Length: 412
Image (cartoon, rainbow, N blue to C red; front, side, top):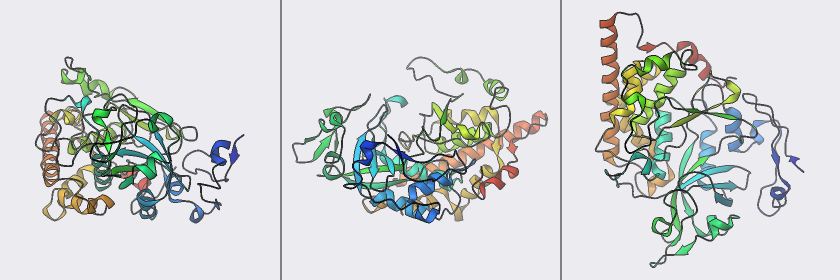
């Protein structure tokens, strides 16, 4: 039997009431807070206000009044359960006492560690600070397409081991020779005693990302990236050998109309700035069809190297020579000394709870952002020069003024 908690609806999404199984309801008196939700948003917990605010063009509005409460919840709210989530590397789903949930990625590397040059991109560790930094960079670029993420010191014993109902996860806990509490979970890569995650002695740094609405309520569609890498040690993808590859993409739905192509270029620019080579798929909300934004999910392999840029990430921009006007103007602004991207990023990250432990990005990573931003703008300038020489009338700068009107307030 399923019990309906409230008559809350998703005005921008799909009308559904929120349901909980009898197994979950049986623990309400002991673990969950009493529910006093009604149709007024003031009665809703921050995670639900976030869900209700999702619109066709963004996950949350500019200057979102709910953001402070939401990030505070992620950083401090009582955790009542923790369980393993799917995926190639270790991550957990944690539940809060107000029925909210979060995706948690534990610290695997020190902030100063660079990705080993001998590793392929698909063999790299996922980094908790990369997930946090990606959220901040996404906001700074004006995208608002990454679910809010904060850093948190998690008590490995009280907030994971003691509350997990995942027996397989529970069996992987042990105490290290120096007295730190460790676990390794179950996943495809790096889930072994040799790659265990350890507290110090119990405190563990982690990224905590608010969960999107459940797929049973709000379906999402997964799209294969046209510029997906081969994920092979010996083969190249078609886009790496065909200089006219974008001509085919431009004629293929959904990239042949609307904003899908420039939305994809937005994601490419984000990935290049943070050196993320692992963008094989992306998702959209089915409710909005093809005329909507792209979700920038799963950024744990970003910020792996600061000493080397990866020009192949920019291939879609170089081959298609298209960028939306609002993105281009924002990038130019962030290239000015008074609005320097590294300075803005440093200031933004300083507000994260884990900044008190250590800066989330090293100065070398921040400097790399400025260097890569310059490369993006130089690429756009080359495109403009090429188009002028061709004289075929195709514009490099896509005028998205009409679409910007819908991002001022949540739109359905």
